[in-house]
Length: 276
Image (cartoon, rainbow, N blue to C red; front, side, top):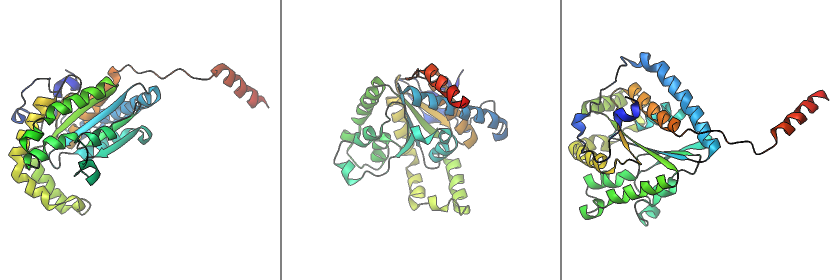
C-alpha cells in the first residue's frame, strides 16, 4: 500500500481519532534509518516542483492542521522547505483582521490560494472557522454548522480550476504534546513560542478532538482528501508528508513545456560566438 492510500481518509468515512496511532512509524525503526529515504523524497519534491512551476498547468494547495505542537512549522521547515521559494509560499491563518471580518469567512482563503505553477502551504487554514470558532463558541452553531458544505464547495471550485488540494492533520497525542511543551520551557531557543494559551487550550482537548473528527468525516472528499499523519515521531511525520506530496505530484505526469524559441538557431549562434 502506498503512503497516499495508507493515511488518506476515504470520502464518507466516520472518523474516530482513537483509531489512529499517533506513534505509528511503519517499518522504520528510527530517524537514522529513515534519513536517506527522507532525503530522496526531498530531492524528488524539488524536481517535481520545478516541473509544476515550468509547466504552469496545475497548482498545489497544502493545508496543515494540528493540535498545538503537532508540527506544522516543522513540516514546512524540514519537508516543504526543500522547494524553491520562487514558486512556493506560506500563508498563516491567525485571528482574522478587521478587514477580513468584513468579508465572508472564506474570503481570506481564496485570496491566498495558489496561482497556476505555484505551491501554497496554509499554516492553519479556513478550517479554523469550524474548529476554534466551534470550540470557543465564537459564532452560533447555526453559523458554523453550515460551513462544512461551504468549505467543500470552495475546494471543489479550486479543483475545477486546476488546483490540487492536499490536507494534512498532524496527529499528536496529549502526552506527547505535554512533553513538547516541557521541551519548549527548557530550551531558550524555543521559549519564544510559549504562551499561556497553550496550556489553557489543553482543557479543551476533548472538544477539539470532536471538532476535528467532524472536520475529517465531513470534508474529506475525493477531490480534496484529508490525511491523518502520525506525528509523535517528528521524523516519520516529515517522511510521510513528503512521500504523499511526491506521489501526488508524480501522478500528474507533468512535462517540461516545449521551447518557445528556435533552439537550433540559438545553438548555431552559440558555436559561432565561440569561434570568434
